[in-house]
Image 1 (cartoon, rainbow, N blue to C red):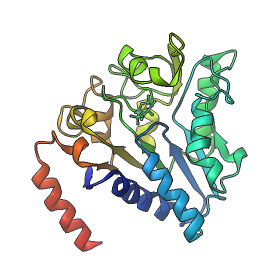
Image 2 (image 1 turned 60 degrees about the vertical axis):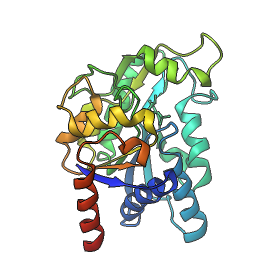
Image 3 (image 1 turned 180 degrees about the vertical axis):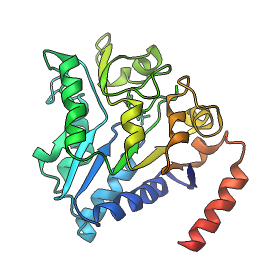
Length: 256
Ligand code: GLP
């Protein structure tokens, strides 16, 4: 696991965008997109590079990680609407190349299988962008999710529902979701997790330095061959081996 320590959220966005841009400029690419606050600075930076430096997403196919059950794609709080607002509507990624699980499907189990198959049909994900929940979840893989899980219907944890309550009218936070599994995420050829703020520090420590355990779903990234974790000072603040990561980063930067 490579740890990149940054001074600000904007710098986190720049470092993550560098990895994504490098892959997108190589030719047709499949990106895995996370929603939420964490990747906002990354998406802002990609949008800026699209506008100012001609970075094109015309040959990108994108798969989102997850979706609330019961929400239609055009619902304001659906992750389909969110990723369009945060990134897709501001770049030249054709809408028919954006794939999101359908939260309003009549048969959610069949929809999960369909979505999983569509990722495989696209050849798998080249770069998966991830945030992390305060309880260590990635996607909506809550604690005790199987480390080899596939896209499926999940029950949201009380903590996750509370964290997302601000986006919904009182009592309206969905209880179920569709999410890519930890097995899917592990298959991405590159994983880039961004985390910001002190309220993620404990989850980041468990992910990076704790045991690989379904208790902290993000710890599955310890098994990934090319996972990069990009952190601001708050998110990095509980890491025990901070000096080591800083030294390794200095050397990596000199070699780059
Ligand atoms: C959400 C999403 C995740 C996201 C995480 C953290 O519930 N399902 O994909 O990474 O929780 O969200 P945020 O980045 O807003 O803190």
